[in-house]
Length: 242
Ligand SMILES: C[S@@+](CC[C@H](N)C(=O)[O-])C[C@H]1O[C@@H](n2cnc3c(N)ncnc32)[C@H](O)[C@@H]1O
Image: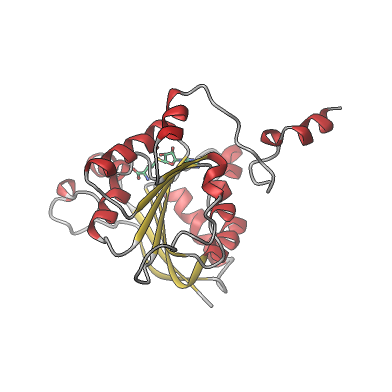
């Protein structure tokens, strides 16, 4: 009986299931996002442009995607700096995506799409090799051993992500959490045929005279807080191998 119900209502399927459907929400920003026109996509709408994100641009442009963009501090700035490329910010928080939308609208930015979605569904949002540059800044570290299964980066997810990033494309990651960083490096080492480490640092701002003066997009919102707290920033830059 339970299984029959699950099949009838695809929002009860696991998030990674191809037939998963996002449920509606009482969050007021759920409705607000549906009312934005043009370049904000929410829920299953985020999966309707798979393979098409670069179309509609007269010049060959690159696709940059930030997972966990929060209120868009970094992705809006990057889009502003590089009008010739297309940028996409993904976050599961309704209000944060709406904030990013307002910011971008105020600045008249045209080369940005914002996706309110679960990051776990990226294989349904992007086609193979569609992404040129992927950013993941300060993902939740899920510090306790019992929570490690929730970490976004692991041996399996790095294989899935590799499908979406073009050969020669970049995957840039930052974290303040040494344990998660070590876990990430082990996951990369287990996928060394897919990813090459182009650069790594366990104290990115070491030697900077005053890293608290750094601004977006050189640092993220969370990174500014970690810098203030004196925490070293860990960074990995990976290249997708052919
Ligand atoms: C620790 S914050 C970092 C935000 C931002 N990257 C920064 O560095 O300031 C993690 C972000 O990831 C988002 N997030 C966490 N899990 C997610 C998921 N499964 N899908 C989409 N977004 C997620 C959160 O809503 C939050 O905005």
